[in-house]
Amino acid sequence: MSIIPSLGTATTGINAFQNGLTVVSDNIANTDTTAFKENDILFSELISQFAQVGGARYQTGRGALVDIVRAPFRQGTLEQTGNSLDLAIQGEGFFMLKDPLESPIPLFSRAGAFHVDNKGFLANPDGLQLQGFTVTVDPSGKKTVGAAAGAIDVSKVVSLPKATAKISAALNLFSNEPEATVVNGEIPTDSVAILNDSVSINGIALGAGAAGVDALTTAINTETGSTGVVAEVTDTGFLKLTNLNGGPIVIELNTDPKTGDPDILAKTGLQNGDFQSAGGVVLTGLVTGSTGDVVVTGTGTKFKTELRPGDTITFGEKAYIVQSIESDTELTVTEAIDAAVAGTSEKATGHAAAFSSQVKVFDSLGNDHLVTVSFVKTAPTGEATSEWRWSAIVGTDDNNNNIDSDQVQATGVLTFKSDGLLQDATTVEAFASTGGFDFKGGAALDQAIAFDFLGTKANSSDGATQFGGLSAVLKQTQDGFSSGALQNLSVDSKGFINGLFTNGTTQTLAQVVLATFPNQDGLVRVGGNSYIQSKESGNPLLTAAGTAGIGTITSNALEVSTVDLTKQFVKLITYQRGFQANS
Image (tube, rainbow, N blue to C red; front, side, top):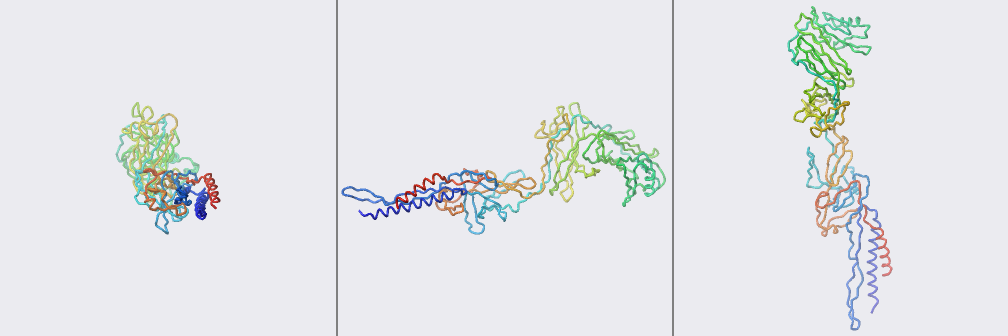
């Protein structure tokens, strides 16, 4: 028998083990390659031949060849990276990628190291763009996922502003707060004629008469030189009084019929003429500070109403500004009217005791505004209940000056039971807003804002309560926000890409596509940790993570290589010895 066939058989062994060494070397080289799948090589024998020696018949082989090189898709360990756009698939599935400049043929990969490229698309290090579904979210938060996959573009994403529609607060109101009551609430509506007023500053009376503005200024400066009160006439013709000592200035107006020009005081900023007492005393504006009661006394009729720092008290068309009130003090405003003139003597007295808080709200353009909510305890409505009236205004200036009447834009009443909890929602105005808020700067007018003091449910202690201890806001929220720019991205287990914006909001922008194949072992490697489909793999099925048996996505992690170095070194020795032996 010739030795030549034996040499040919050994040659096939050399070729087979050489391929084995190539596969092992490739595995070892990719020990740390993201999502690399360890390759296995299987050998098979060449066709055998029959031989006969004497009467004996037997078979002999002709060597070995490589049967298949395969990469079983075993799950790799997930390694944390700290990068929110590093994605790993736990289970079945491949990321779908496309080259925006070259072939439109999709590629598939388990390597999920992504970033936002210079055009605003999510892409891998090779510039291949990650594919995903579009997502729209309705006001209720329901997500609608699109059917067609495409590149994920986050370059033009912004968070639009949302106007505040609701303010919720959990707070406690001091149960022993002084109360304000209303007595004889009937308000007279008779007209009172005012001929001429006299002004009293810190106890020094100045008659209006027929004196001009300059004469009035001179008289004030002469008579009050020792009091520290200085008078001057502004460019617009108003009389301006300043107390150099920093103390209060008490002004008393007394009617004294005299001949002269009835318009003199009108020119100096003090209204002179007829006025109608329509609806009684008008209180407007609330600022941070104390609140209390105002008692107004007239002929045969008296009543009480609330007084707060910054309030304007209007008797008919006459207005007196309450600049500030210290807690538990009284403020008296008096106007004396000559008995010869039809009318009454009016007197207002206020007792201060209050609680207020501020919350930042947003208009339709995303501009923020401070809203001050103040609370005043009114008289008990019965033995088992008590009431607090609340009012809301749009902020105050830095100097705590008076607030215009149109700034009071929401009011309501809180009714508490004897256990300190609110009554049921059906019997208490805990969720109420009267009118709308008008903000400056071109925002939409009449913005409705609801105030919720009920908490999660009626008769609970996580809303407004009336217990002992200081009045305090425990928790306060509102649902508006300004516009915002994209600040960061995150991806959840179902592949939803969420954007975190500079205004603190989060929006769902897209959903990552995952692809599966009838035979994933039939995919063809094309380098760069990527594959393309083939006849053996079948067509891809595009779906979302976590559905229909598809794997889930883990962010801040990458799938590591499945190469087992110990096994590869054993194979390396085996293939090397086989190669030597065949040689």
